Amino acid sequence: MKAPRVTLDQWRTLQAVVDHGGFAQAADALHRSQSSISYTVARMQDQLGVPLLRIDGRKAVLTDAGGVLLRRSRQLVNQASQLEDLAHHMEQGWEAEVRLVADAAYPNARLIRALTAFMPQSRGCRVRLREEVLSGVEEVLQEGVADLAISSYSIAGYLGTELSAVEFVAVAHPEHALLGMGRALSVQDLHGHMQVVIRDSGRQQPRDVGWLGAEQRWTVGSLATAASFVGSGLGFAWLPRHLIERELREGTLAALPLEQGGSRHPIFHLYSNKDKPLGPATQILVELLRTFDTAPLDVPIPALEQVSAVMNQDD
Image 1 (cartoon, rainbow, N blue to C red):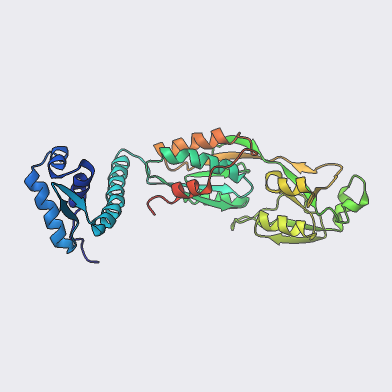
Image 2 (image 1 turned 60 degrees about the vertical axis):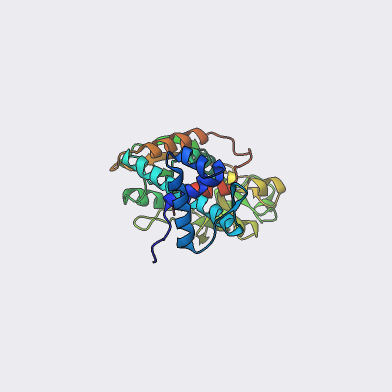
């Protein structure tokens, strides 16, 4: 890659001339001589081969090309300043990245709100969010590739902070045969019907969760796929209420009237990497995750673009 011919200092000088209204004013702002400012800008024009300023009376005015380059240079100088700030924060122990793994059943709305609140405090720290299912969260944490983990399991050897419970509801399509019985359903009623379950993403000791007594079972890779299958009439499943609230409200899914066990309420916990001390950015994110864990799920979610920005800073 060819080395740049123009330095960041030269771009800053041009910006000062334009922003402060002339060479003399830029010299005062930058605490340099006027001749130094003039030479820097002239040298830039020679190096670029493009006129940046023209003299209009006693005032230096941007050319069309100069205007385009100046706008782009502001982005460049700003990014360089952010890079220097990030290096300074890292020197003070501020992390460059926080890695968060969450069970796919945990409400995304709460994660989005926490990450949106984290963004203005992040100081350039990236967030890498990874979704796993069941024991997959535990494996990622134990492998040391996550700083924080949200799981419904009690992970041996880790002290977790209790979060809220997530309600799972047994549901089926409104025209499913189980709902056509018109009475409270027993375990025996479920035996002869297809159950849709979500595959554990863990590799070492994958687990089955929930009632699995159906003679037929289909295993899918995500909660969204399970909801689509059940909504199409292909069996029944226990799904997070927050994921299917609209379908329940609109009547495209219906809760099964089970005699018992129609809903489950696993409690989620927030864990941290026990082999790595929490840095200041991670500690801030922990507090925000705890704060927004209890936030209502029916309030508007902040713009996803904001979350994408904080998760991909400095990529």
